[in-house]
Length: 486
Image (tube, rainbow, N blue to C red; front, top):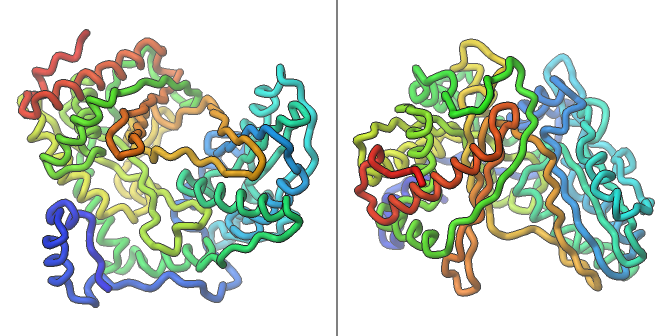
């Protein structure tokens, strides 16, 4: 019955230590409204995360920048009718997947509509293998206008009698990365049932997305109330980001255009199991997390390559702190700004300690909507670069979300939409063996092709690995002395 902050897990990383922490917190301390299903008002507001997505969508409804594509290659005797019926079952189950967002006098609102309003084409389209990727791309890169249509579309392509591709495209306003796991589970359950001529039997979802939206507003309160969570977090961020640089001077290959095109490309690279294991050992020795070690190494690379003493990166946070949200499809993610001040004479373990404290503080203030933060601390908007940060860092879950359809072999397709929302983004996924031992890191850099050539980004990736090797070998190494050249 008490609320334990993330920082407590790092400050007291034992069962006994956490027991003392829990025992010292009064049950009413940090209490907040309970997330439950509730009676809906006639006008249901969008969530804070949805509001940002709504404005980005209305700025350019033809843009596919915030489309999330899911492609599944299905080999075997597919029951196409059962599959598309199962997809309709899932859309019926999750209200977010059948919601439109018309504007109103009081801001955009959520309007849940029947499944029949969702663009789920039940007919399998025959397609030649030579043009399959082009057909998929044409569906993925088509935008949505979320004010007049449900931002979800599905297509089924037949490559051969026993070879199909299911393509589902949803806009970020109704789903996020963590939504893919419950979506896959529910689709597998529904398909198994429909293929057996029955209806899916699943536990009723405790809440729907609209319930979460109304609850969220109760939790954070109003900005006009100085004692509210929203006002408190806004004060924190104004202090942390005071005098922050407008943009990072990255080692680009071309001048920055006045308007970002969002065109991007992606390179991939790996970190071997031995270095992965050493990074894990370093994180445990320093009472940090793997995220913090990698964030500190990435900040060190940016400091050296940009000659910067003030390194700011953005990172996504899942926003699913309530158990009732575990199995729900919806848009819960928020963006948090991580600011790190670095001097070349710092030892890496000193830098890691600063990163640890700053990251924990940032994650403890992760409820403030990113768009509201931008409004509060950015004096003048620009179309030339992303506000507050231009470089991102994220760690992703290592499990690939693939539904298990009876009688079929299912593979996830890698559908790269060719979009980069930032100048540069480093994404890292930890891999583990069956016994839990480190198996290496899968990493990727997504970059703006307006600014960078591929060879430049590959060089940055190589330097990141080189810095990680150096700091894991000697955590006391001076950051400015690390040899980042090959």
